Image 1 (spheres, rainbow, N blue to C red):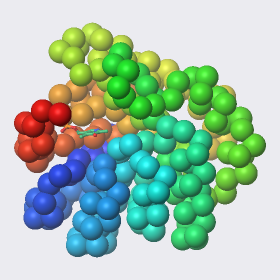
Image 2 (image 1 turned 90 degrees about the vertical axis):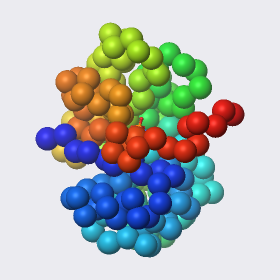
Image 3 (image 1 turned 180 degrees about the vertical axis):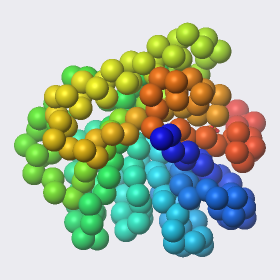
Length: 211
Ligand SMILES: *Cc1c(COP(=O)(O)O)cnc(C)c1O
């Protein structure tokens, strides 16, 4: 029951076309305008998943068609997604992104900030977003034990939220975790969506540049 998100960020449309012909129907992108351009160029039965840090002023580019936003990490972003979804007369499914890695460079919620979000009046009034689960990224390390512990932690957060806030909502069932180097561990720890880029499309060019 695990679904594969083909992470095609930075890759040209031709690469996505090839993956499409091989049967891929879920693509993950982390830049709004790039995703919009690819969506316009490719077949309409593709489900587009947004997986990166999303700026509020970019939501409008993806709101008409995005299938799932994995990276909701703050209330003001959810408010803008809700507003843009309303303009498009649709409900946008979202995941809550958690900070599970040791690095402090990664975005994400923690248990106290998510409770604040889910208990806020602003959230309770939103009618055009639906929260379908959680997302997280493990620490970039070779220590498999640590990675497994972080995935297990995300699973625990998921179960807690499911029991506490989403008991009546059958669609709250997604745990998005695992990338090229750790998707097998993630599946063993309960992932329902794995986000795999370089293992499908090869290394991304910008990775060779240093910041
Ligand atoms: C780039 C990216 C991935 C895929 O990474 P690979 O190591 O190439 O598989 C997965 N998730 C997020 C959030 C990403 O930004």
